[in-house]
Length: 505
Image 1: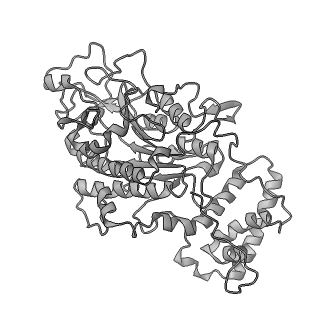
Image 2 (image 1 turned 90 degrees about the horizontal axis):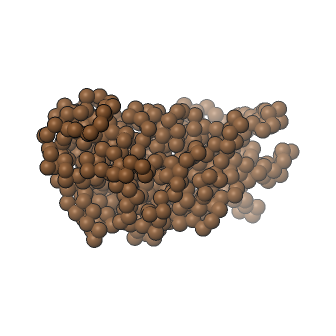
Image 3 (image 1 turned 90 degrees about the vertical axis):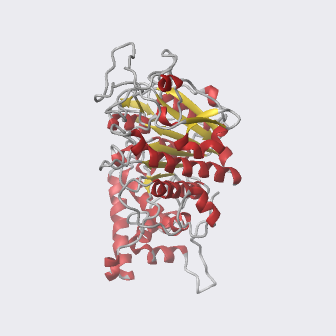
């Protein structure tokens, strides 16, 4: 839904501010910075009228999309498929017996102990009878809408490289995040909000930090905009600091007149350099967000029953430092609710992160020591919020055009580490999708009897296939969405990727 611009002209009503006056006098500077471009579009400056969006690939979508937007749920630290979604009866039968993989295994740490059964019981749910761990049982009511891929393979057991691979399609830094590619290919549905928004874990960043959602060589306006729902200032530096009270209207006007002149001179001397244009556009967006973002993130008018569905507390208590499932439900649920509010206002791609604390006891998914202790609160938190998100989108008529992806950087081993923990497993793990164009109850591939490697080792699923499928559902042929960089036509899927047809509705 595209909202009208909050800026307007009024020649007759002296009580109304013109768009120009509003921008000069609002935002403690951001509005003034944005004014130069808006004046240019009003032909009040000598600069030529800019391309409406020179940083967008204007040829997409190429065909009728099934989805208009994406919500990605990223479990940072490597969530265990074996303890959440991929039930292996063989592990229950052989629990505690010496593990034998039938081949040499390169373990990340000392994680080749005895076979270990799931930390929780599994039960079938829905008409499909899909087994789910009791720790994610909140997903039971929506499980028939999920399509699982249990044979996903990675390239490395190193968190930073594996996180890059799932986020950007490459193991090295310097490549755009998936949301940046979607923003570049499709642009925004609302000029007052970013096309790509990132909701990090409230405790901090995953491996690589903001490089996971950077625009890299794409125009800078396509980078993810970080928002922290629940903080006093969810968007950093959106509003002026209290120390800026000395700024007067005249000084601001003079400053931005000078900035505008310098910017034009800079651009003339650097034809083809998009960095200044991207920066100006970011200031323009920030000015518009001063009105749009607070409303989008304000959950005060959401009814109590809906907050309860998401597990969100209207007045959260001061939780203890120990791992607390109720706290995880509140924070992850709030991000899910914020994601729903953002996408229904036109944000194209929302990325939600879970589990980014390396203190002890852990609050991330990297459960080397104790799967039950580490995974339990996080799993209950994401399952509650995600189930609510799916149900909420569905009752609003938004699920059919919103694609949800659940992922992590790799899985965990079927053997034990230290008795009750699990080591890294890049050889096989799980993703699932839901919503826009996805066939609920479908399976894109299975793992072997141990959940150690794909059942069909000649036909694994890769992250390139996941990315190709997502772009396809958005109306984009993944081989066509390219950007020329250093003499190479780069793309999200590199030189790989096949659409997973079995997942499509």
